[in-house]
Amino acid sequence: MKRIILKISGEALSGGSQMGISAESVKRVAKEIKAIHEIGYQIGVIIGAGNIWRGRDAADNGMERASADYMGMLGTILNALALQNALEAMNVPTRTMTSLSIPSVAEPYIRRKAISHFEKGYVVILGGGTGNPFFSTDTAAALRAAELGAQMILMAKNGVDGVYNANPHTDLNAKRYRHLTFDEMLNKHLQVMDLTAATLCSENNINILVFDINVEGNIQKALADPSIGTLITN
Image (tube, rainbow, N blue to C red):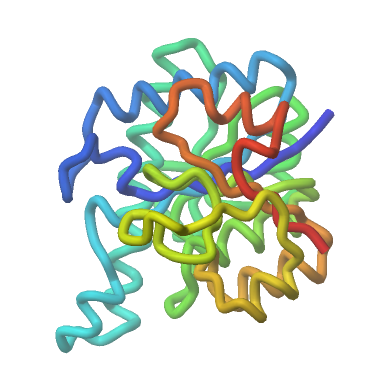
């Protein structure tokens, strides 16, 4: 059975507004996750918090970086709970685990317990990032993929169907890569994920598939046909 990590930005839950959680957007994402759960995938979900809080922006405006990052981690847990509720409303068995200890809200993240949840058929939502400041949710996705034995990270983007050689929103001649190696991604300075995350994936042979989550059914389509996005491998 294939085990994957789905990395979703917080903005995917905002419903097009800059901030907040849109119930309709959460339901849409939950429906997509349900579809791949029903065909047998073991799914771990990492969610960002850009719809609630941006730690880097706060740090740039004078807030202590560690405090700003911890606030962002709490934001990811809010998003995780929203997604958990939507999945359970669709009768998808779900467990939320957090790297920050909040036992009255969710289970603490324990690697062996997470693997046990996968084997029992639960979707596992992993909130709180890595639990440490100065690390992005991209790094959290790479770290959890490595330690949980996931074969691939599905990196869901908002309105962008892969990795381009230029900004497709501003350059009409921008071309999408169908396949990249990690070395090419780094040498071309393509902003797919941070260096720590990319290194973790490369060293552990974890493939990355970048695709557009805003197209209905695209998570399942991406798994069946990676050419709809950009596949990054060693």
